[in-house]
Image: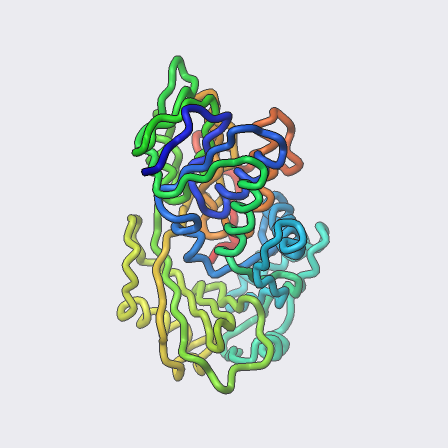
Amino acid sequence: MITVPERASVVVIGGGVIGTSIACHLAESGVRDVVLVEKGELGGGSTCKAAGGVRATFSNAANIAIGLRGLEVFAHFPQRYGQEIDFHRDGYLYTLSDPENVEIFTESVALQNSMGVPSRMIDPAEAQRISPLLSTDGMLAACWSPEDAKASPESVVAGYAATARRHGARILRHCAVTDIESDGGTVTGVVTEHGVIATRTVVCAAGAWSAQIGAMLGVDIPVVPVRRQIAFTEPIADLPKSSPSLTIDFPSSFYFHPEGGGLLLGWSDPDEQVGFNEHFDLDDWLMGLGEVAGRRAPAILDYGIRTGWAGLYEVTPDRNQIIDRCDQVDGLLIATGYSGHGFLMGPATGEIVCDLYHGREPGYDIRPFRLDRFAAVAGRGETNIV
């Protein structure tokens, strides 16, 4: 039987990389009685289904800064948090086959370079040298970012959770939130299936389930779940000796990287419907993946599929995350809607939410991520999403 504490200084809802990073940073900052509640296992939602990419190759300055922080923290994660995370800085390669995307990436590279990211535009021949499985047919150019990386999401969650516990945080697994209590527009408690926790502050880090959490307080959090699937090939004897952390055919969203002696393959089906569908449907999805892979990396079609899984993206209307102190309900902080890049943004998000809790100005420009932006004129969305 799980026993919940009678009260907490802050309750974090969600035990993925975002929630555990927030709990860790709050506890490290001296906040007493931090409680994290997770309806399943830690990292058992979207985090454990992530491909593990870590990058700073975004199209707006705010996301670039957050991505750079992720790369910096993950590069030293074992020393800082006592947990190996299989961090490899093998670069990101984007292939481009239409003039509009070449122009967009050229502009983004200039912005990235101005912020210290050593990305560059390259020709198809160089792209093929970097990622030998590629076909250059129809490719106009590519973007290469050699310092982008990949890491193990489950290990990052374990490191943050262990550090949070060492600093006094309580982490309650298999403890679903069923309601949030408020009085006069102020949070007063979190109702779980195992009891009520009195608190004045709640952090919604519930990923694809965040809209349900917001509804408990009458707050519209515009996040919808969309299924994404990943497959793994059988071991490949002639796998190239070196390959990027991710090779991405940007127009189709098809991507791959080495994994377990074979390849991890991903593709975002444009016809996927909104919903909590986590069924791995290999046959139909593989047909679509095979079509795009056949154009960009045809050798992959000769490899057998060993296994795979389905997970959920938490998607906002502009594909940018929501990180904010809610104006509608006092005591509600929100960190959700990462639209596929939450893993790499975990480190900076923990710092940002910790600053918001303490009433400090965050060290990042989070104006593009305010909740109320959806009620105003739409700003520039993040274009570099797969």
